[in-house]
Length: 228
Image (cartoon, rainbow, N blue to C red):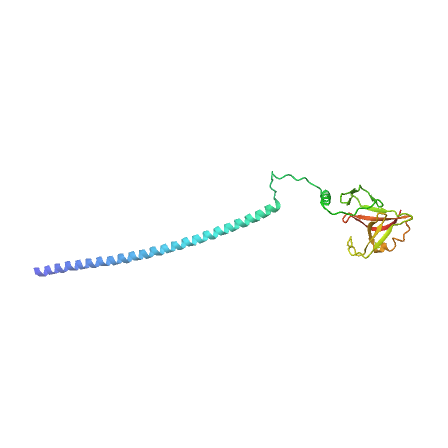
């Protein structure tokens, strides 16, 4: 009887030990599996955070580029508008202040500097104008009013010669331009073909020849016979 009881006790102890060992191994496996799951979750969380960081960086770069482009566009527009509307020439203390010269005076000075010489009229041509006539060094005439040249032919000698309506180089660039020489000084003047047809046959006992002075070309043109 005592041996049977001892056997039961022994079996109980062995079963308890075996059960305890089984529970230990089972808990170990569960802990290991739990740790693996936690590691997988941690890795997933790291990947998600990495993707978030990358996305935030891309958004920041895109926003930075957009701000820069907007600033550049705004600066360019502002600079262009300011340059056109509110541009103030910077003051240069070393540059000598230029004296204002009227346009007519600049033109006159330019004519004086030029080597071009204009036609000089003899004393037989009377120059008239409602304003004072200035004769420049290059022979060009100046006046605030229109200038006319008048020739009074001699009663015996008219001195109207060399009427030419076949000019190769027209002075005034007119299609029907003619030229002729008048006075003892053989002054060359210009007229139209229609006037040239009868100007030599005019009665100059009571007529004269009047021509307009071209301030652009420096010649007498549009000559016609007129009553004195």
